Length: 173
Image (cartoon, rainbow, N blue to C red; front, side):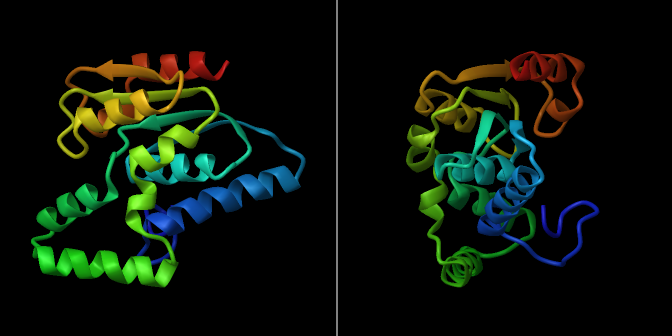
């Protein structure tokens, strides 16, 4: 994602995440590849769900620890960085105005019913960033979605857990 990990940039947001996913899938298609599986974590999972709901041509979707509400996620973000609710709300409004998308458009209840591909939601019951109920919200709102509930892996360890990786690999096949 832009401005994350080893990627360049100093700032990014959820709509930019969705556009980055759409761009990569588009480039792969342009090169003659079909995307069999799109897997994304946390806010990236929200972006992936949004892109798939808009018709992104992928065959399967894995959402790892997705937040059901970007607004609530920004509240967590603001809390971690000591930002006031006024600052958080201003940040959200600025992103919405700049990107031309409202954050509620990324909510599970808005996105999930439009997802029409096999979907696996992986979420830990003790996730301290995005509540387990967030994963449940996606799993219940996406028709036919599977929920893989883990225990004691938290928000990040699910990305490296051998059992989770095996389940994702099995889902992909």
